[in-house]
Amino acid sequence: MVDDAQVTAWALDAGRGDRDAAASFVRATQQQVRRFLATLISPAEADDLAQETYLRATRSLPSFAGRSSARTWLLSIARRVAVDHVRAATSRPRTVPMSDSYDAADPARSGFDRQVALERLVAGLPADRREAFVATQVLGLSYAEAAEVCGCPVGTIRSRVARAREDLVAAVNARPGPRTRGGAAG
Image (spheres, rainbow, N blue to C red):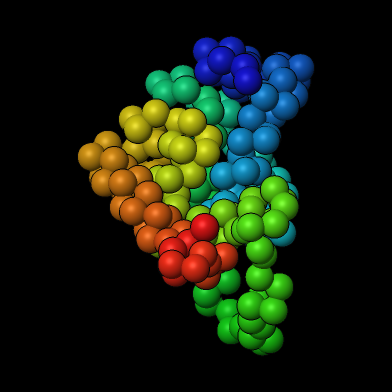
């Protein structure tokens, strides 16, 4: 992963019209932006939302002053894109309600199934906790950077991450799994 100082330098140069810097900025950040959006909204919509994030960021690059890291600035734009997407989606009625219980992953089987099960548990977290958890534990942002991205105090981020961890532990413990003779999960 490229360090934040270099990403910020590319963003500043891109804001002054340097196309190579703009391409480097996108390459250095696109995986984290997509991962953040996939976790906040859905993997199926992450590419479109990432594209919208970069469209907004590109328009705003000339005014980016570098007061925070470019990565933090970009993830805050991605968060706003996700919020706008949810607002738009909730204003439209769902036409075909579908249950995905028919294809539940088996966490005791393959690594892929465990990954799918984990992603579903994280997706089941309340939005504010999921956002803080993904920013800090998946993307590796500091609590201060996550607070800036999420637009709240650092203490709130710490609290949300702690509660997300508690929720995930409770969800894992509540999942049916293989049992031993004594009835304990094995």
